[in-house]
Amino acid sequence: AFEHRMYVPLASVVVLVVAVLYGLSLRAIEDESARRLALRTAVTLATLCLIITTVNRNRDYAEHIPLWAKSVELSPWNYRALFTYGQVLGRDGQSEAQIEQLEKSLKIIERGKTHTGLGIAHARLGDTVKAIEHYEAAIRTDPSYVLGYINYGNLRAREGDFPAAVDLYRRALKAQPNHGQAAFRLGMALYQNHQSAEAVELMGKAISIRPELRGADLWRSWILASTADDSLRDSRAALQIAERLRQSGKVVTPRLWDAIAAAQADQGKFDEAISAAEKGLEMAERADDLELINGLRSRLALYRRGQPYRETEPISVIKRQDEDSLD
Image 1 (cartoon, rainbow, N blue to C red):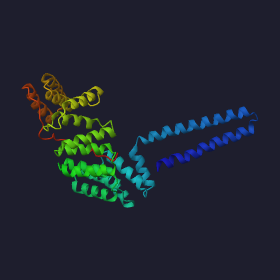
Image 2 (spheres, rainbow, N blue to C red):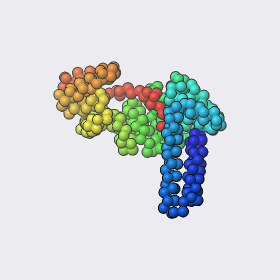
Image 3 (cartoon, rainbow, N blue to C red):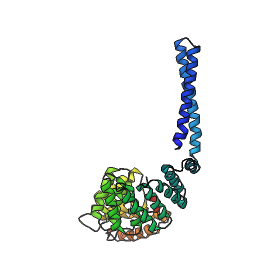
Image 4 (cartoon, one colour):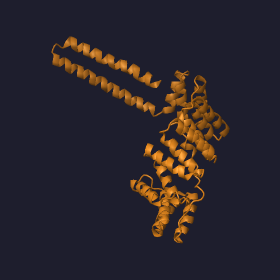
């Protein structure tokens, strides 16, 4: 709505300015080269006007909430304006106001995306029943809308219902087979559901689709280094993945050092494992990550005794609500 209100009138002004100036030049200037110069001058002036107006417009866009509030006021029937206004309010932490605008949008046209936005907003307010109601409606309204399944799966994973989360992420991947985030989330849910072999496979798929999903490589490295399943454990591959991540400088976290330490311990390199675990522990202590601190301390004690770590229960990985998204 705003793009049309700002650019359409502006475009007509620019065209008018160019036309008037060029028309005057045709009448007043007989020399052809002078006419061309006049046209270039007119276009330059018009472009400057456009740039100045665009700068002012971008200054207005810095205030997204008033901008979209005005758009909704002018076009209360525009479901897209209502939806976007709601999302802007949600990003500002105004979940109740977000719900109000999305409900209005939903009354005009029912979309899976709008139901998903409402599911996210209700989940943030702690109303799981309402959130599930809207996620179910999103899937029913638009079975091809992959983010409906993903955000619903996130909710189930946070509740610890990993079989349900696995099912939802599978449905997301079925709806869009080359969706990297769906593959990654499915891999994580499978890991939490004690299905590590398939989890590693899905994380590899996620990376092949979206190489920037380095978290998938991080967890793949951890599983390969630490799993108690002898047929799956591959500490050499785990170390290669982890070292590649470390050298990239993108994912140097306590969990990465934890994976490196587990892989080195599996190969009998306990001095290197101790050094890596100590680096991870230092980082975890700075971050005040109590769960990771305790885990690293217990694994460090094993390495100091010359014993590798074998994971029999998956690490608890709870997705934060701020990771729910329509993007």
